[in-house]
Image (cartoon, rainbow, N blue to C red; front, side, top):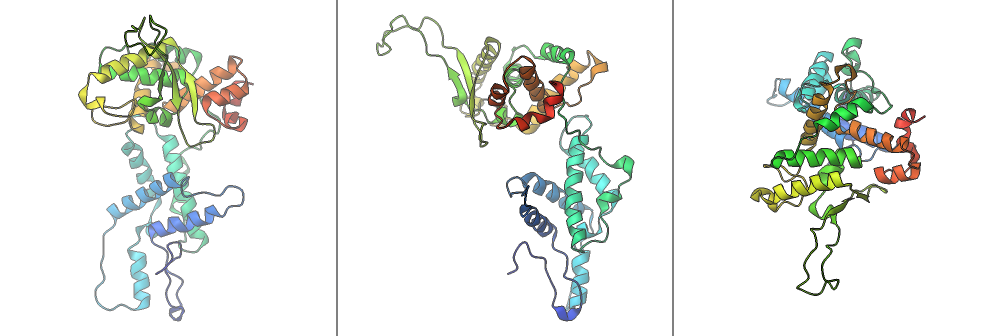
Length: 361
């Protein structure tokens, strides 16, 4: 059995070059090479989004290809030719790349917003894998580089983006009032993002046990007494954030506005039977937890409503990351030490703040 990272080959007696690898084998071959990089090795885990992108590209091409099946005995040369015919990635055109990038943007359900960042990331993955194939002589031309300059997604600005003070105030005004199940949830999610600066992933990973409450004050100081009556209901004091990164696990205190929003949401949530048994803090009527797209949709539509008030100050980004960046910059500008900002944001080194430094200097 051939190793998954090795390319299929023909006997040397044929005088032909080794046959190109299958689509996913090509990705594995590229990933193996990237994993050997001296300074920036790429791991299997870190490459998971890239594998998804390359797999989506192969699926897109398979949907456009005309399957052909050879019958009967075939010579090594004809088998080599058939292998080429049955691998659409070998014959991809710049037009297909452009069509793929356009369709991917729509399939990500990013409303009607421009998806230049998503397109650029997809474009970059295809470009790197095809460069690898070129290096090994499996393709003569890189179809990604064949795109006209005006069709290429613009390069990402390495600097982070934030909201202007006016846009931030407009965003605050668009946070919904808790009048029902969904508005209560949306209000709580938005305030978690805007007050604690969590990432979308951290919000989605919160569970009920991550909500920390103060101990109830009672008329009798001896808690063991069953007749002790609470003077008032306990309040939410903090959220516990978990994660796999070194500094990601942390506990963040919540202010009254956010505490009230969380308690309102929990009250509505407890009254809706399908949600009552779900462990996730935030869920939907149909899903046990929020998806990436649900959070993106909520933030995007709220930012769109805010930007309608100030169309001359359209946000450079419309997702949760621009909210997180804004909160981090506000912390830095307020006089908090760099160490405290890193702790609040769950970041390990000052280098992680480099993309926002130009807003503080």
